[in-house]
Image (cartoon, rainbow, N blue to C red; front, side, top):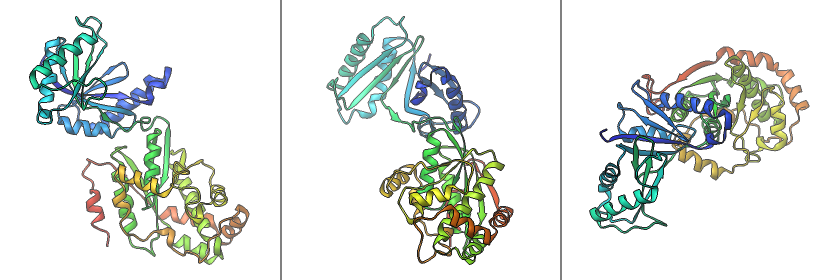
Length: 403
């Protein structure tokens, strides 16, 4: 067997699923195939990890794409070699040549699943370590090496690697259900979507625009955010709902300080109708308890009263700096900082109630005929399928349309 590059994709939480583990693995493998694209993808199962090869992708691109797949805790680029100590040592030396200018300390870690291998784990580690020392003259540090060499001995082949990279962790997207995320152009809701995906939810999005009283900038931002989140979930649907006229109707119905919460109840009513239409089982928002006046406990309770579907809030206990740090890590922060005309700022009252009650809001909604407003908003809505790699406009092109 000639040496061949591959990636060892290791499970995280999936290993705790007992009898259901196989079903979670199948969902993960399906998501990996979607993320890698192409037809020549070889994925082989081992206890606790997968061996992945994709000839149409280079090693770096294969590794990068697998690092974005939910459900993998470790992504380990490796060289697959024949079932001999000599082949393992040669592979280790070849991988370490790129580091010879640094003269790092090193250690060899061996895990032996193939019990027919002629050497024990300690013997193979000592053999490879001695070869590396003769080749480079480096120092062995078994406790805290700067460069660990990982050798995994399978029943018929050996895998050698020097990189052990973090994956996204969590559960495979789609294994726990389907969600509709209320996606604004800010920091919070994209992070809430990411955290929902990480818990296995397949996410679609709904974005409310203030049209006809605002320009399309917020829609372009929402599209760019959905496109960026497609790194972690390759395909999603973005619903765009012009809500400006409905917001004005609520304002002229005398909502006063209740207006902001009345708007949020309107969003949930529309989102719930869309969710039921497209088989989404829950709604997700980016609310953080007490962050703004509309997110007091009383106002959140009053808002939820407008929807029958469960409303999940993954960021309920996060502060703003934690949310921004996470947005920066997942790649949505720079998009969220761009200016736009947010529908939530339309018709904002001079004073916002922090203790709204459902009874008060029902009176306002009755005067405005909220059911008619929901129907009108849905009639004006449209949907975009976000699926990178299908010739769609990129986020950069979409954001170039702002202003």
